[in-house]
Image (cartoon, rainbow, N blue to C red; front, side):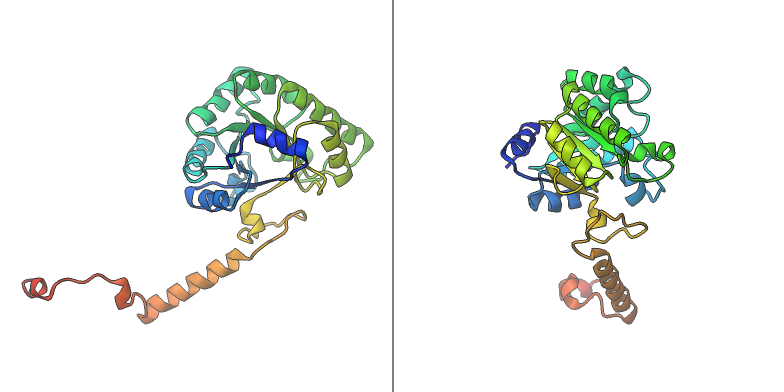
Length: 275
């Protein structure tokens, strides 16, 4: 079934859990989409898992658009959401609308995601008014890593927890169709989920959220530079890939690959004419 912002809202109303994963290329998007996931995020996490950077801050709008195009070609049923990179929506409302519009018009995204609460409400309202669906993002927002002093759990005090709840309600009122809750206590995420009528998508925020999202390299064991506590590895694909590549190297070195079945033939009469 084709997933849309409306089916996301309906899932919340019916109590159906939503599943999301990241993707950055055609081949992986096709596999994820055919597996039946509800949504795919072209995350600025590509800064780390694709580019090898220490954080997400270097990711550009052009890079997100490039990867969104590839994902769009491979995903036919999932809701496709593109991350708005650092400084693509902070400088002005006009920049926010323009950059969000590029992700939809050039990249083919169905919606965009941006980080923040009260500080980005004007941008959220403006982007929604431009007919572009917006997914919010609260808690451990990676673009604020320097302000937070690292990747740290948020909402652990009464004051900060209350602010997260207030921000979530405000994002819904501003027109957001869903909110990612990252790196916050499960009980706080549960309170937020009850406080809003739009879906909450958790990542390190407990099971009471309306859905979950993970970076696919994390959950498949393909990225081991750092494995967050909230990640469950459903397979160790990285190990399998290394083993397969090792077998390939060995067979090449020993002359075992390619075999006759992997090669093309020429007619013997034609071959004689070459000598």
